[in-house]
Image 1 (cartoon, helix red, strand yellow):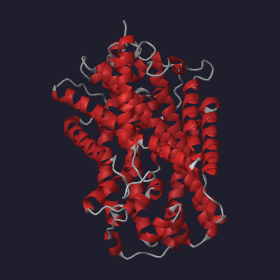
Image 2 (cartoon, helix red, strand yellow):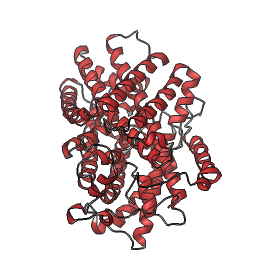
Image 3 (cartoon, one colour):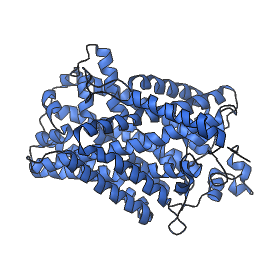
Image 4 (cartoon, helix red, strand yellow):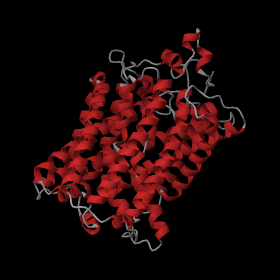
Amino acid sequence: MTGLIELRSPQHYATSPSQCDGDAAISRQTRTKKLFSFPQIFSFSFMYFVTWIIVGVYLYFGLLNGGVLGLIVNYLIVFVGVLAQAACFAELASILPIAGAQYFWIYKFSSEKYRRFLTWTQGYATWLGYVFTLATVLNSNTLIIQGVIQINYPNFKIEGWTTLVIVLATLACYTIMNVWFFDFVPWLELIAGIVNVVSFIVTVTALLTLSPRNDPQFFLTTSSNSGYVSSFLSWEVGMLACMWLFMGFEGVIHMAEETKDPERTIPKAMVASIGFNGLLGLGMLFILILCMPPIEDMLAAPSPFIYLIVTATRNLPLSTAIGSSIALVLICAGMTMFSSASRLTWAWARDRGLPSYFGHVDSTTKIPRRAVLLTSFIVGVMSLLNLHPEAYIALGAITSLSTLSIYFSYALVLAVVLHRRLKGDFTLGEWNLGRWGLLLNIFALSYTIYTMIWLPFPTTLPVTAQTMNYSGPVFVGAGMIVTGLWFGWAKKTGVLQIRNSSFPS
């Protein structure tokens, strides 16, 4: 059979009642090892976000548009929206937990007429979004590391070459762990999850004990320091900072083929970790606002989060210790993003969205080594753009695609599944939302489309080469290339194949 073959339910392939689940079906086709237990995959998903830290990292952008009250309101809106998205995705993960996730689901649930083109589009939207998000995360984490260095070395300059060195060193560590020592990663993430919680408790205790407090009225402060005259526009643009706190929430699904009992553990781990992260993030947001120095000083600081910790605790050794623990947690969180992105690269190459050479799994380590190295190479090359100020703008333009691309992939999945639900042709898995599924699907899709409207808006006015939000133009350009490749080459050659290597025929 040429081209894409039809996916069937896991039950179709079962030969005994004990095999009538997604795990049995996927076990037959995967060549990776099932390493993650539920506690480990929960910790993996929990570490994927570290929302309480990212609240501080992106504090600047929230204060810039909407001020304190805007931050709180936008956080609550995004938290509720992401929970709805995650609940819908958890239903799908219970039906078909597999590394490719979104593009597999698109093929399974879309109409026969459009499924091959939609699968191709979805696959590239998700893959590009993940690779560019990884590059963004590495750069963001590096800013925190450099901020910690500046605590004790005020003359240390944050320059392109220092950023590049730290990014490449971090990337090398991720690559080594994923290629040669991945058996230890589940345990590493479990330990990191504990360190994450301990770091949260220490940070909160230090801030509440040592910091001066803002008046309760400060929580109702609104402001726009970005140049937007309209408060409505300013608030909506400020929501982008909160969206980053939960970006790639479904990343744990891409580890499904290396997880035990994935059709049960993956949905639970994803939804529970988002809920836990969201509550920790909300608590930290209120504490940061309570202990925050003047907003003008925050906006002027090279690393506002580290600046807040230093001014709040007024204790250099303690600030260094807290900052170092935060940097360590962020490095571990970056490992989860790297692992997930490399597995998505492997799945997409396995189905020939990328060269099939990278869809290979090493026979000794049972690791998709080539996909890991390809992911590392692409992100490393992009990071070289840090070396020159003008090239750094190009890096921002490229990585700005990540949010819009991933949200587009969400919208596509939610729309296709909603269509199937309305036709009455949708069979639920073990983990499901019952009668609430349709309503949550509609809400999640509405939220996703609405937030996509604001993703291309610049965070400040007037718009310059440095402040331009390139996500819209880059997204359109990438979409044109992907569409052109489909109609000019892939459609005619049948290069995209979801075959026996991906799912049993």
